[in-house]
Image 1 (cartoon, rainbow, N blue to C red):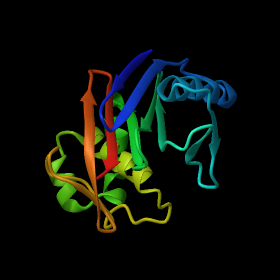
Image 2 (tube, one colour):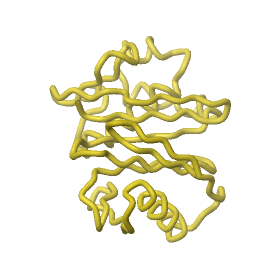
Image 3 (cartoon, rainbow, N blue to C red):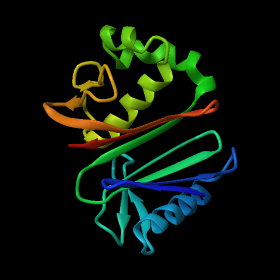
Image 4 (tube, rainbow, N blue to C red):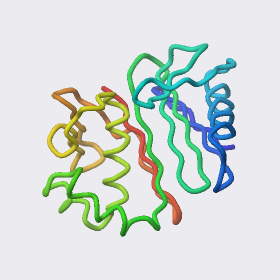
Length: 174
């Protein structure tokens, strides 16, 4: 397990089997969330599948791809989102980007489609609006220091990591 704590959020990551049952995955998610909150928590999902912590009121976001599981917990009440993706899925991601991104975003991130995907997915999770129009209402920054916006609210790309195998993004509301 790997953990990272910042003034605004904490992140935990661990390896999981590539083919894991939903129940086993939930147990791993709860283990990481409990580690981050320093209390035993259970994870429930709302009607849209978003995770919530029983035993803590801290906002949480979860993502997994391949054999990597990531859990992020906010240190205050600000919503956040995390997404992790295998870099080898870049070709598949490129095929769907036009449905979730503006032409300007696609042009800016043409050399790194997985970054764009992770930013959009993490921003969607942080926004918490399942009916949102990804191409118009979810805008990602032209640089890591520029804000993301959702329906006029500002969010920050708080963390962007890339390894040879994975890309990870954490977005948190300002």
